[in-house]
Length: 282
Image 1: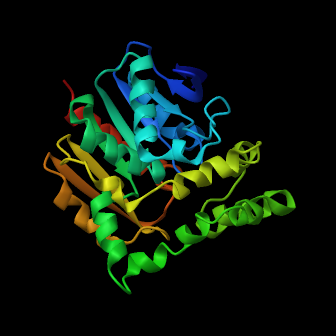
Image 2: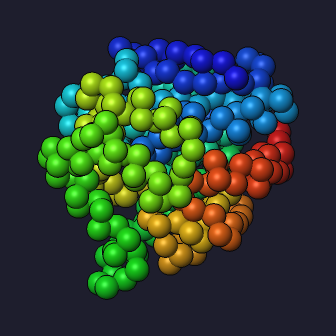
């Protein structure tokens, strides 16, 4: 696995890649509050299988792609980043994999630019329309799970909580949701850089329920993996996601696994992903 830089317009994204340069491009999108490091197991495995597996540190996480204007973190820009990175890597058509916020972006790419994707794989994050429906139901499980989003949208307070006392709050977030170990320090190192935490939180602040407008049906062969111990994303929206996929669809549930699927259950998730990619070869 190699460290790489990807130039897109005036921005430069850092990332990690594995496999031959001419291999079939599989692009990975991380979530909050992580980096491309979260995909290390999958990059290595797919690279060994001959794919060109690439994960990049998304807008706000890459030092060279960290604008300060809030509106530059709207979904339209996040989607454009994915297409720009793929173009820079020579992949007009590519396979897309996303988790958490990266999963949300992946759904939007698939719903807006279906001709660009060979396959879609999403871990944890339900389709945006399924999520919005679940969120709007008064007293519903998802509305309760998502109360933290209102706090994340506040100015300054989340940064103070996460970064005070040597980022104790940020480390506590990982621990409370099931992610532990030395690997957490990779994320802490990035998110304690100047403006990085604010940039990551700006994804929430710039988000709107109206983002779903303009999304078409998902026609790419789609694998969606959800886990039962996910503290943030409940079963209702997960099970409703298939209603928004018109193409071939596979829904897999990992019992007893937390939100951090790619790291907590790397063998199971990678096997599902590899099978999905192989089934869509050619």
